[in-house]
Image (cartoon, rainbow, N blue to C red; front, side):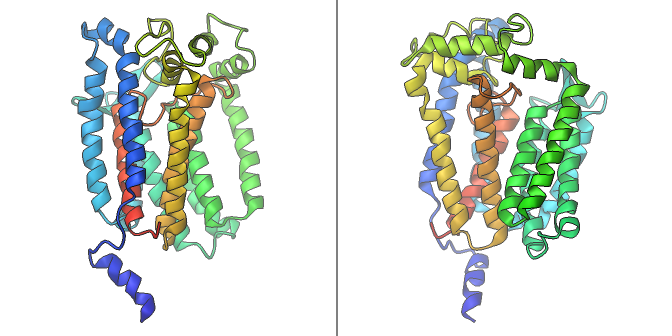
Length: 378
């Protein structure tokens, strides 16, 4: 009878613990800091587009931050166990959206990429939605198959098939950075869930072969890798973005030029408010003050993993691990690429880079994690 008490408490609607306000505070600092830096980074491109310096900032607030905070609040109130019930349906719908992106007259094509669906004032990016939905799906699979995860064919392969379908649809867009984040997040969850280490190595080796094939299929991917190894090889071509980013970082020095004083944002640095925004942060704030952003992500990981460790049920634990892995992998890839220790992949810095869909889903994920924290003995 005593074993039933936690389950009864979880379904009675009563809070067993308070929400992790430290985690909430960390998220809000990142969000506010991101909006402050976006206001500076987007100033020139906003003026060029609309004549107003705050155009992209206001768009991010109205169509990203406000609906995202509302979703975060709602998600923090919904018992996270509900998402396990609807995980298969959500996965099916999200895969449908990923397919719809590729259809003419449905998906929006920007350059050579199809990543968005037009929805009035918003452009929905299904590859952002799938990051959270796939976490629900893989967490549910681990919960239901936890005694069979060491079985390669029955416990592991079925879940990997869904991951590979999602990855394939994302790479067709193409968006190799998001594909890497999705796969890394899913594999981290499966590893923590209990798959055999040797199976993980087999997957890793197969992934390296597949990545090599993807690089060979598209010449620009190989060129990006060459630019990573030797940024001076083509400074006006494929190496232009990384060279300008490194120039911004080097110019910023220890304490930066000062807020709003970036030189590179004046039509020199590509994707200045997207995946290159960290270069602007370092240029304006300097290396010492810009460190606050990586430190905040690190502290978020600490709090998130503490919540995961204190969560009693497998589904909640795996969702917490998945959300932490996703946000931190994405932040590490973005910062690593901009400072030159990883190849450029073109993914945004969570809660900081411009992008309404990404910000909304990031905040919704924080809401789910906050709900998990209510029932974790942190």
